[in-house]
Amino acid sequence: MDAKHKIRPTRSTYIGILASMFALSVAILPVTCCAAAQVGVFFDREATRDVWSCHGSEVQVFTAYVIATGTEQMIGGAAYRLELDPHLQLVSAIYPAGIQIGDPMRTGVQVGFTECASGCYNTPVLISTLTLWREAWVYDAGLCITPYPPAGVVQIADCNGIIREVAGGCAWLWDPVPADVETWGAVKQLYGR
Image (cartoon, rainbow, N blue to C red; front, side, top):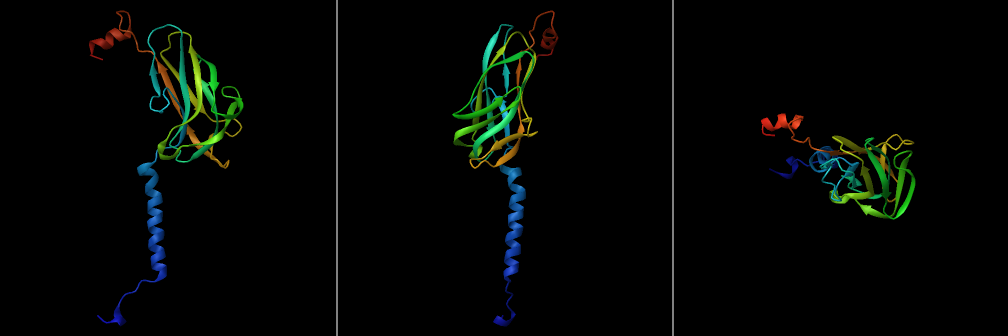
């Protein structure tokens, strides 16, 4: 074949191919590698336990953590409201170094960090350490992050103050049903559960 009959792609062909590859990678990337960003409540600092089983009817004080997960960005702060089951009481909320404006349960709270925290590579970012009190036996009690009232959404901010909406997550505290003769647990034991 001589030089006169060779097919030579034009610059616009290369640009079209690159644009198609970029669009495809952007469409596939969130589905394949990234968890949904959220601010949630967990019972461990690694953000792996969102259900905690407490046994017995005694008064208990326990710790929970408000953590941002799946953000894949540097985090400079967050804004949210904490909603608790009526059987639970918030004793204290401790925040990383920085500033906090508001009340986590009544008005919602804005938290700003003195130093940015890395949420990259699915690293959990601690926003608050909660000390909670449970007065008596409770079957199923929720601890949820709900929208920050003035904004109407749960928010995180990067180190430059650019705000992003994220999901709010819940954790559950529950007591297993005892297996006494007078309880539903006795019936469940008949079936090996």
